[in-house]
Image (cartoon, rainbow, N blue to C red):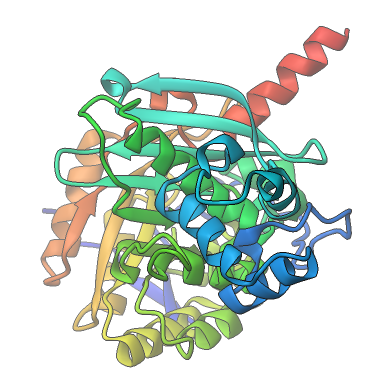
Length: 402
């Protein structure tokens, strides 16, 4: 292993003067403007999943029904995974359509679904009530089933290597629009539509389109619906839920106080401020040291190990000296690194690291005693990276209009 070049200090992190540092001379374009506040748009229809159990009972009573009907309706939606009034035989015939219409309106319409890995990886493009597009990905493994969900239509963080970031932010999703992505996946599993026989969702990752922490209220409410037992929610373990963020420090600090032992995943992608300012533009507001301090506080409060997400981009952030710097930042912390071979977006000049560089990066991190995994690159042949399928649909529609 060749020795690392000596870094020069910038603030509380180090930047190498190595010629392959990914800095001036080999630097990506300057970042564009961040959008932290979602545009104001019409709200989706009210849905049972938007409401607490007490609010559902009040809503049912307003419809002239006895409050316990809310429990029955909730059990159908979260327990039996149905929104079909024909299947709700325990509800009075004259009430079913009214209750379903008022509290279980359709929120997501499938536009396109692609599958690979023998059908065990399924990506769905959904159209929302206002025409906005979002994506979810269901991934079945031998020991678990994970669904990756979107929290916003588009994203305002403008990370230049991300298809969603380049699309810009359309709007925040409602709590129910987030939950419905999980329920739709759970319904497919329960019906045996995914190879492997009927099953259940065990893991939910907020790593689809959008920055979850920029839609904080709806995301936390969605987590409560997902983790509450039936009939209040889906009954998924909080320890099976991961919330990803590019580093909105105040929101990380707030999440630590919610009493929800979910896993925090920090999309770091560079250990030094100079490069991260470009790769993850929110870094111009909250620097690497601030983001990691908030992450370590989260780990201390929740006793949950933090996942450090790091997309390996060829010749940009995959140098061994950067692995050394990352190792020094994480050594002795309750954290592990999830290396992500970049899934290139159409037209992007950036691509995944060379296998030899990936292996060297892993070795360097492991030399600091840091647990490292390399993410399974499922879904590449079905535009698996978040935002790619939506971008392809937009291009197809433009081509059709010409």
